[in-house]
Length: 86
Image (tube, rainbow, N blue to C red; front, side, top):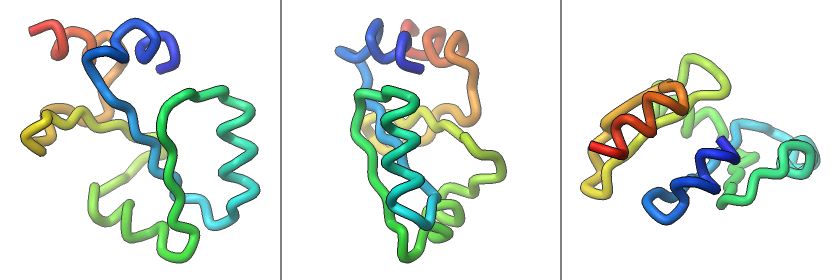
């Protein structure tokens, strides 16, 4: 995802929503992974995010058009690039 972001960051925004309950776990994962995009954590009710987006696997990803329509879910980087280049 980092390479994808470095290559296509001018065409997409990435937002990571953590389902962690502990801020320290969340912060450690960001440092370990070196992800340069925006991250959010709702350590009080993380399950609401999972329910809202019907998350079944962690990690999950969604490609959301600027109109708000989800155009892809749990795709490989190659699949995302293919959709972006259309």
